[in-house]
Length: 350
Length: 156
Image (cartoon, rainbow over the protein chains, first blue to last red):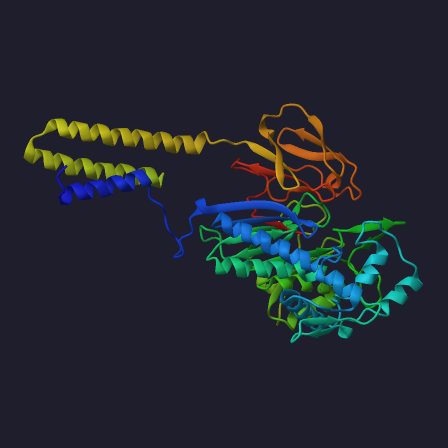
């Protein structure tokens, strides 16, 4: 074949014909064929990771999560948290100290509505073992006396954490969120531009979907475990829901959920049934979802008005949905869902 | 359809180019050969488009993992009558029930019974999990009209 202009043009035309023409919308080109997905059990929950990248990256993420779990598990006798609770004074890894510092700042920010030292009370209720029971008033009072995050001393210079006697901590309320943040950091360092993490119901997205659109996330209907009550579009954000429907037990018609008020030691019954927090930081969303549930709707709304790093969706026991103004464009209520009131209330900052 | 249009458009352009070239050199055999090649690619593209649009597999496949290893994969779209079977693991037993397009754990001897309470699994968004027995059932739906509203995940 003679190499001339026409032949080269023809070859080019054929190349286009054979490979097909892909429309490119955004500047960052992500190859959808690099989609990798894995599901595994870690941190007492199921994790599903979807990334557009390499298999090695998935392996690295799993290693990261396993490593964090081995340090943060409250029940594993070899974990650093177990060691802190046992010895009350322990030198731990940088990651654990980092997490405790961030958790304590959330406890402070929420004025103790989140408290990582509530663990001894949680144990009395049986929420850690599944053997549920209502503890006696005197038991709760005796345990609640020692619940106070302010008595945790965190020495960052020496990586040491010191507790008072009778005190025990559990990072369960922030560990998954922190893990999400760590995984996102790892993904960024591996040049992954698009990923969706589902860490046991905690959703965290890196970037947009490869086609440039936002990730579409369903929000669990608290009144029906096979339904979603609405959908939310996110990008580069985390979505964390705390609900009284996750772990609970019923005695004489009263529902006792696994979220405990750190000041009274009682299972929360304030009319809320689900709180969803949307924001850039996984750990903040995770911690605040619990704290705002403890606060109750009115106080939680006030808290949101004074903050600027998250948005929220509240669902009360009567099926009423309240959302914050930043979600108006991105959240849509599903029409046919069990018990959910179709008239949604929107909260503005004024 | 846009794709189809652009293909036909490019083909017309190429054939035009060739007929002009051959008017000069008077080589009708070469022209015919080219037209046959282009025609072949055209027909092939059409078949591929039609196949992709109408004959794509619409199966719903359930994958059952035990301790991270896939031990069963079941095409739920081919299930005609309900069937059940027991999966025995180190920690205990789970009875799996399958029907057309759906799967559930009907019985289990785990302490928390969360897997049984999660009910039927009909979409690919959230898997059924039995934590005590390290059993995970997830669905992969290739159906275009799946029931998960094309969600990427569910926050709970």
